[in-house]
Length: 224
Image 1 (cartoon, rainbow, N blue to C red):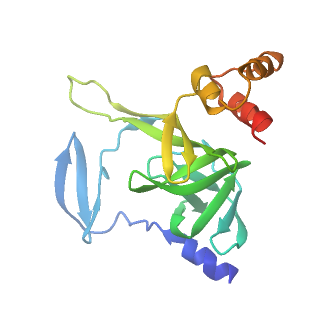
Image 2 (image 1 turned 90 degrees about the horizontal axis):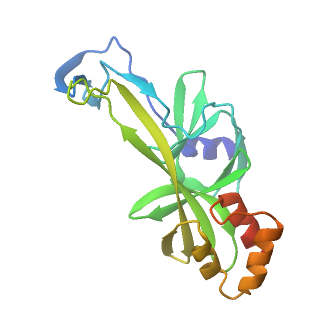
């Protein structure tokens, strides 16, 4: 059962040999788009130098604890999160990458952080669960900024650059509300508690309304 579930969770991203017949090259921004055996591979040819990575972690030596919808748990090594594709991937044999199927996934814990697939804006995305209670859940979403390389002399950007940013959401039922981490929103979220008590807790513990770890400590103190 464990092996069968693992097979269902992992869908293979096939590596295509460079010796395969290539046809119908199309130039795009100085790069080459090639078709091999009916499959399209973008930017296979003149791949530019990159600065940054599409992955959340620089290294792949991460251990994931996977929990499926039927309650089964398993451990998987060499796992990373592809921010661009919003999917967890596992590295096997040094160069083979497998995708963990979010459809069979309940939660995945990676580096002591718990992630959960949820549908938002008609797309399944992975969210880090920062805080959870019977009143609401605080989630963090990772997004990727891509500054594409171009050989156009007017652009003068020969290096493709990736940066990451975070967005935070308060979830109540099926309602997603994006939120900025600041004093106003913290007090609004904790409106049933004394403002003086909140301010006193912040000062005594030298917390900041703008730091996510301090938000988690604040919510745990008053909600849990």
